Amino acid sequence: MPEAAPLDPPRSLSGEARRKWLETAPVLSDAGLLAVVDRDALLSYCRAWARWIEAEKAIEQLGMVIASPSGYPQQSPYVAIADRAWAKMQAFWGDFGMNPSARTRISGTVSSGGGSGRKHNKLERFLALQTQARSAS
Image (tube, rainbow, N blue to C red; front, top):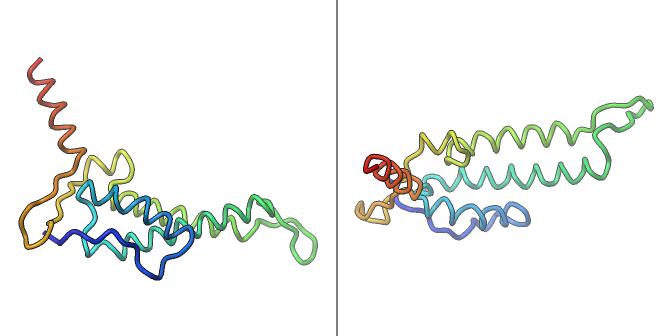
């Protein structure tokens, strides 16, 4: 099993990306889903989040349709940026079990160090208790 990742954000993260890391990393770690080898994926997710936020703010300010240099209406380039960032985030949601269907396929088991002391996914424990309760009824 890969070793659990430290929760401190990479130094290269700032602003919205850093805030997203600080919000997301502890939740993934508590679920046993954040290993050292996952840090780059989480970094990419946080940067996609920041890009999406920035693009959405620009869309709110400028609108979804802007005037082209010739005066004709055209889609704001920020719409495409927001859409690409959203698609990238959706892929990471599946990888990290961050949506309901993905959580049914994800098992959080990272080592707390030295190959022993596995951390178990809180959702797995909850579902196991629910199954036991149904079986007992």
